[in-house]
Length: 243
Image 1 (cartoon, rainbow, N blue to C red):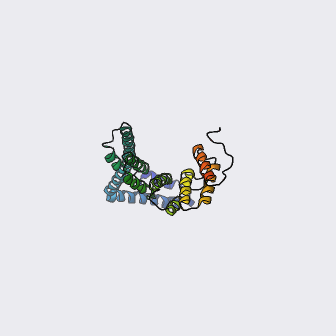
Image 2 (cartoon, helix red, strand yellow):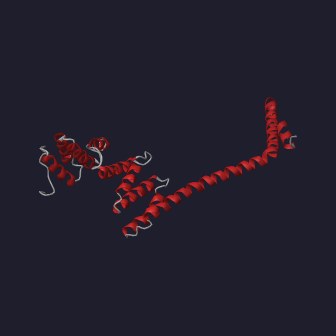
Image 3 (cartoon, rainbow, N blue to C red):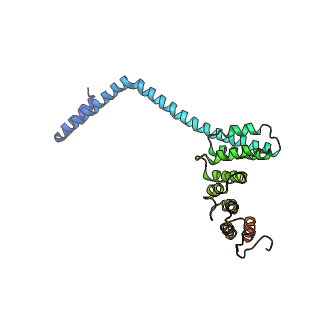
């Protein structure tokens, strides 16, 4: 069982280490024999398992690459639709945008829905545009920025057909200083308050918009005029006409 060199090495050991050396060599040979037997019995299964693992890993890598390539292709398709719309080639645009609206990529899906709503408005189909904006706002999986923008546009289209309290409640999270949509949401909220007869409250809201330096100047100028028309002094502010 043991090679000759192993026996000579054993005899050369000091007496106090013979037992330890002998046991170690027995253990090493036993492990070697067990490993050989295991390989004979299970070698084919080990190879098959390794092949399956490599196949699964390769498949996962391929799928990831496919998803990236598909996303890139969809972005290119979306850009081409934009180009076609800009060139007034809109015959096939609705179908292409509807297909892209089903994309698993959130950015592609949201952009396609926005484009579809804009195209509907261009074609005077307000009902369809509102439906597309609602689809965006109701999908919690889309980024908040997309949903907020869609909510503003949806509300602007529906402003004359829904109750003032619905406008106020819907836009409440956005009609606050510091929010990127404060100007648009605040103006619509203010006008809804006027419809309710709450002119002082509306005037104070317009004054707050006028004093917010993060709001675009055009919106601030308009807010000054609206606040003044409601009897609220928005303060002395620079306007586009007297700069």
